[in-house]
Image (tube, rainbow, N blue to C red; front, side, top):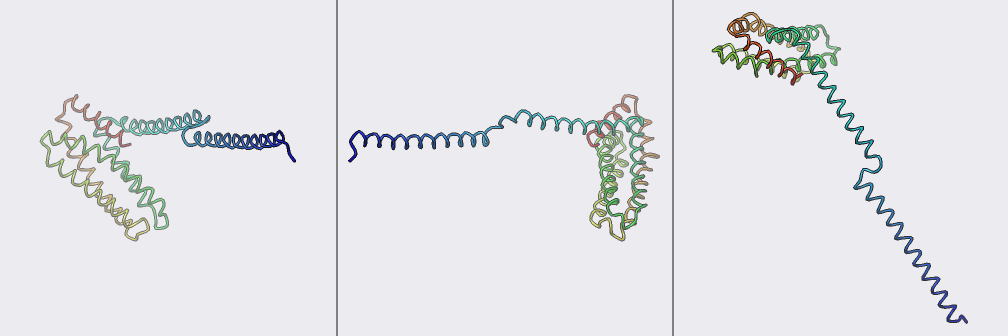
Length: 223
C-alpha cells in the first residue's frame, strides 16, 4: 500500500507533468500566434529590401517613361515652330499609312501593330491641334476653318473605329486604309498650304512662340 508521502509525490509529479505540458502548449501557441501576427500584420525582416526594390523599380519606370517623352517631343521640337512640328507629324502618319498599304492579308499581326502606332500618332496630333491651334484660329476670327478641320478629326476617328471592328484580315481592310490615307492627306494639305500659313502671318513673334510652346507641352504629355 502506498504511503501518503508516496501518494503526494506521485500526485505532485502528475501535476508537474500537467503543468509542464500545459506550459509547453501555451508556449507553442504563443510562438505560433507570434509567427501568425508577424506574417499577417508586419513586413518582417525583408521589408526594407523589398520596399526599396519596389520603389527603385517604380522610379526606373517613371524615369524611362519621361525619358521617352523627352526624346520623342524633343525630336519634334527640333523641327522648328508649331506649324513645322505639325507638318512633321503629318509626314510621319502618312509614312505609317504607306507601311500599312504594303502589307498583305497574311500579315495580320503587323497590320494590327501599325494601326496601333497610327492611332497613337493621330491621337497625339489631334490633341495638340484641338487644344491649342484651333482655339487660336477661332480667336483670330478663323472659326470656319477651325470648325471644318476639327470636324474632319471626327471622320478620322470613325476610320480608326472601322478598321478595328473589321479586323486586319478583312478583304476590305486595304481599301479602307487607302480611303483613310486620302482623307488625312487632304486634311494635312489644307492645313499646311492654306490655313496655317495665312494664320501665322498675322501672329507676332511672341504669339508664335507661345503657340509653339503650348504645342510642345501638349505633345509631351501625349507622347
